[in-house]
Image (cartoon, rainbow, N blue to C red; front, side, top):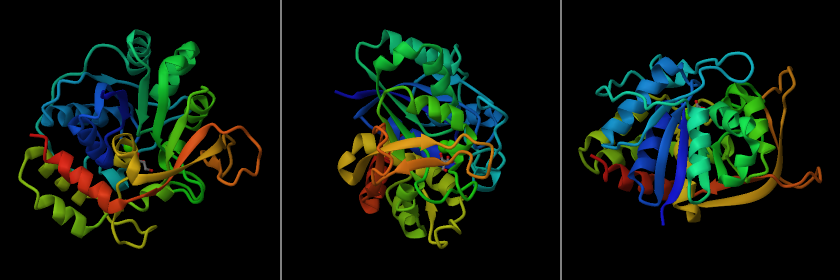
Length: 307
Ligand code: BDR
Ligand code: CA
């Protein structure tokens, strides 16, 4: 039985590959794609999501969501994703957004689904938090919340914080307080999933389909990470999706996680108690290792299944 999921994203170069992976994978049944601003504004992320679902030949509904976090404003990450979110790679225009705003649609799906639904969040957590904050009882309909978010040590947008967590820390705190299991794909995990030139070349050798080509072209625009020694760019968001498809590629640890919501330099930091020092109740599963070769093989295999 495929796992019913809602994919909440802000495409985003790595979101693009995560979205294609989800749509190509029979283990997942993608009920809706919901979109927020984040990496760039919704004016780009929404058409990007529509173009990617069309490219994949999918008719999954794509819904617009928040273009600002619960507090303040999103700050774009154009240095990584380009002004348009896809590194300047132009895809054929997709269709139009489905009616209904993300948070309303998420609540409606949770209410109506015959079985609990997994929420996947690979952007700022705003849409997911709005859905659960406005009808908290629906958390009982959530199987788990799988996020690319956070770091147990160093951040990538500030010294303390990872981009998605920092973009809407209050939203992430709402998810952590929801009572449902939250799975964290952190920067420490995604640092192991480096898209090196050799791995991209191996993908290109797999075929010439439009989705595979787009994934390769988009990823090729992302500069190698200075933070990670310039070997390659971390493929963050696909790791979160891949964990649902092939958990055997990962190891994980149950932890207590709290958000730093203060106004200071640690704002947005995910305080991850990997060694049980606080005695706080466990509220999260933190992915710790990934078999990167296995991950890239899975991605290559699935991208070639798409048109
Ligand atoms: C996360 O931030 C975004 O820039 C990426 O799409 C990913 O979701 C990594 O910190
Ligand atoms: Ca993202």
